[in-house]
Image (cartoon, rainbow, N blue to C red; front, side, top):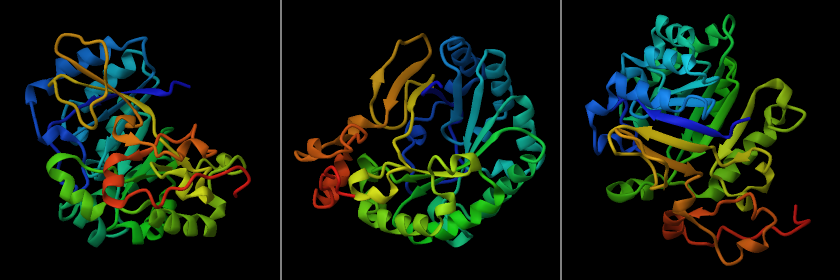
Amino acid sequence: MDSKCLHIMTSPVCNNHCLFCNDGFRDNPDPSAYAPENIKGIIRSYRGRLSRLNFTSGEPTLNPELPAFIKTARDNGFTKIGVTTNGRMLSYPGYPLDLLKSGANEIIISIHGPEPGVHDALTRSKGSFEQTAGGIANLSRLKRSYKFNFLAAVTLNRQNLPYLEDLIEFLMPAGPDEIIVNVMQPLQGRKKKISKRLLPRYSDVAKVAGAYFHKRKDFFIGKQNRLRKKWFCIIDLPLCTATMLKDTIGYGETRIIENASGHDSGAPGKTGEGRPGSNTRIFADNRELKIKGKNCRACIFDDRCNGIYKQYIEFYGWDEFQPVLSGAF
């Protein structure tokens, strides 16, 4: 299985304004970078080099050429073609079907609360929950007739952490193949104040998530439950703070991010081979933003852990992080 995924920045706009967004597209929007031939050119340049592709950044469904981009990806040999979306456009029944017929086979919908009061407060977009929930319902219906992966992604922060159980229980009847819980990544620069307000303590996340997963062991990830094809993955929760969740903690994938504007989102990563009109960045679990403490080498999870965000340590210190020794759990 290819662990690397090509992410193509597809839209310079988004109809949500999420408090925790770390996507830099609004800082330097360049509409010309999203011209159809620029994006199709990037897709063609990776023919035979990668098998996985995801359309992302801004809100990709707001680019009217998205179905055409998906067809181009399919025609150029990509076998897993995904769209990461807030799901609002998917509330129009014909639209998600159009994406699937064009060749998309993985849809990731971001949702951040089990009801409008929680979700809309975080997206700062009134009515966004209603449309996202409608998109989820449409995907659930389409799963009966079409073969594709439906994933739900949550960005966990201090505002929605108390609602984690309610949110997962809301999602389960829709039949997602996977629920990805992303613990909020610290924000940089002028958004640092938002980080201080929203960034949850990892020990609080472990307490809430651990209690829920203990109660719902039937959906807990593990060898015996993978056959259900319904499972959870928690991203960026340090293992030393949540040993009870060790089988469900992950660190994401290696993302190769392309856009033609010369601007990328996230941390400054390793520069790849440049091509005229493109900007390549490679991100492996945001390691550039993380550090390890002096005791981390003694932890049995050291080889699996990529460290703690530097800004998290700046806010909360090292007290939560103690090495897990052999036989300690």
